[in-house]
Length: 396
Image 1 (cartoon, rainbow, N blue to C red):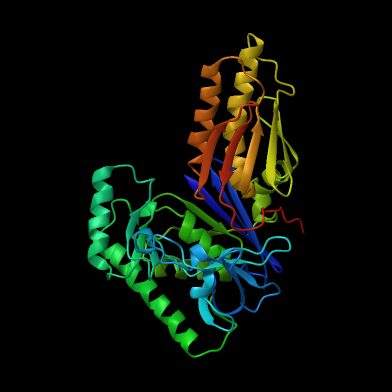
Image 2 (cartoon, rainbow, N blue to C red):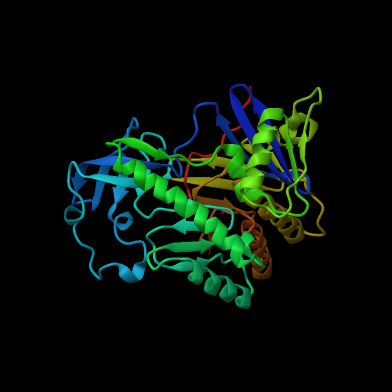
């Protein structure tokens, strides 16, 4: 069972997702400072750079957005030209286009934008111009994948595309089609607004943090939803109904003397898990350091001395660290290149066990990660899709 805990304060809303009592996801949103990720803008091209095959687009933010040629070409690979044209053949200065933010502004860089539009719903991600259907790789059963794909093909028009989300497993045609109709109307509203306004202009913003939390994390039949604000609880209930769940959860409105994060042990966990040095249950610890290019995680035995010999002690620490590192990466929303310096092991079978443990645990993360493997120096290398600044713990 998962617990979804939402803490509302006058200047910030924080959410935490707990699995078996451990915090695995955390996000915070300041009042009036909702992020740009997923937002649609009508932008104006202000600079076209053939040497970079890219353009800069004014979307009304402090920094112009960056648009690369791959995000201008047709989203379906089969419909792209064999040789990429020059960006100057596709865009010109002064041109007004609809773009969607798929990477938040980071540091001194503006947002990354695309014309490969995607609107996430409960059961599908709707891609109005993609022209293909894909099924989540987390749906393993081939017969179910085929059923969902055939069913989805019946719903869409030729130019529309869909990604069938994991939660769609065993769902009916009515569920998929209902989601599609709702998202199609949303896209039509975006298009209508774009036709009636001048650039730069915000056309559509993604859901609030609480709504995204429900859409992306809630599973029917057992999840607990706790929130400490009665009005926001009513809004959450309305959103559950809007998403047409067959089983609406009981929303618990917390009214204790402590904060809801304190009452559910969330605050204590977060304060430990966001430190540079994080202790493991067995006495070992990991150290997480960030550079501009990558994140480095170092594993140490610390106080753990429990094995019959050095190899056993080291392997036990590494196995525990692998599971915990996967959780910390997800919790802290660490993106980009990640290098893990596990403690040296002599036996190849132990190295394989550590690698498998990390691979299994990292699959629980919704954000795409790729475990590359061991380098010649004995370091473990992986990458994780980076769409926003790494999460930082808010302390009031």
